[in-house]
Image 1 (tube, one colour):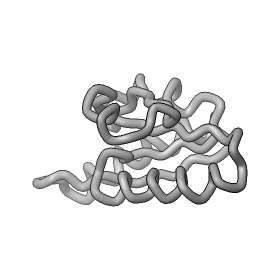
Image 2 (cartoon, rainbow, N blue to C red):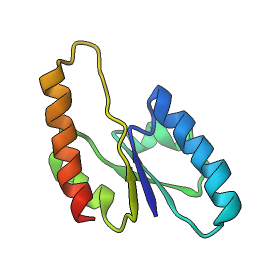
Image 3 (cartoon, helix red, strand yellow):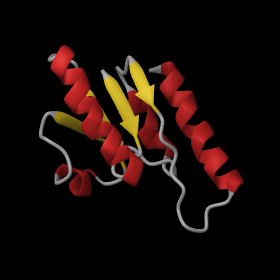
Image 4 (spheres, rainbow, N blue to C red):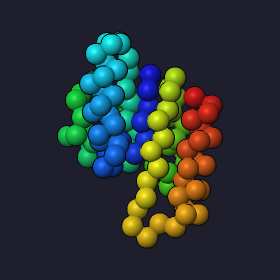
Length: 102
């Protein structure tokens, strides 16, 4: 199972689409999980075979469940308008810890 963070962002959408196209072509049983802040927003973006999981860098309690069972995690950090490097770094650390335990 591959879990991708930031899946609804500009880069994340493209990555999910390419992984969906390339990985599933060779490994049809592979599961793709999009770790997203809003599963409602994401549902319209991805095929139903992409599993959506609630995950927010600002809600660290959501991250362990989002990464559970993942063999691979592709971490795409977010950079929101007004975010500083320290905020981005803190969000990254919050994600890496639960992902390493998956």
